[in-house]
Image 1 (spheres, rainbow, N blue to C red):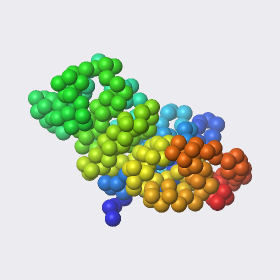
Image 2: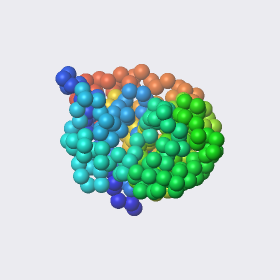
Image 3: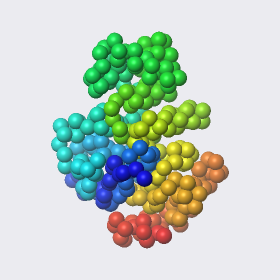
Length: 286
């Protein structure tokens, strides 16, 4: 079994100065070279965890607990120290690929710059290798690679970001809603690309509301509701034999299962437990 690369322990995220808890006492571990998926509905706190991990939390938010990445605790590190990890040890695939790319540069140039500055390749070799990465992801390096981001579709821009992820020496990839807004064919293609990252030796933390993505990626998953993890374990076990009422309801509410609404008594009981017992509210729902 692979060693643990990321260990998050009792991570809480609060808004300041209200001290309102947005993520409460979250704990999970990600093993090197394996996928891990955080799943839950919009607004449950998944992206906040990714932001705390990568060091891009908004200034009016604060994080407590520990985020141990290959040993050291990232919580409390300065922005300068965090930035040393970007691209070199970890890489974030954001929800909006086009906004993450430089609109004034051709995309092949953006991939080649990563190879130049993070891997030390000479400009000519970097450009050639960037073209190879783009071609390997099903795009034309000579045609698509010469475009600016605004000339490409959302799916193409996503592939360019995946090419950059492969170009970096970063071993840990955080993918935030990588299939958001994609049709079924593009969703399947995006999942295959994420699987390719893992096959290339990368460690993947995927954030999604799509149960099918979690199942296809495999590995371990954690289900979130209202800022807390309600259930976690191997993807196949959790999705085939869920224990928590919310996980059961989430699975029944998926399109492939008829989009049956989660029973109101399940949601109301969780809210009641949340109000009465703080960070232990989800345990009370079992």
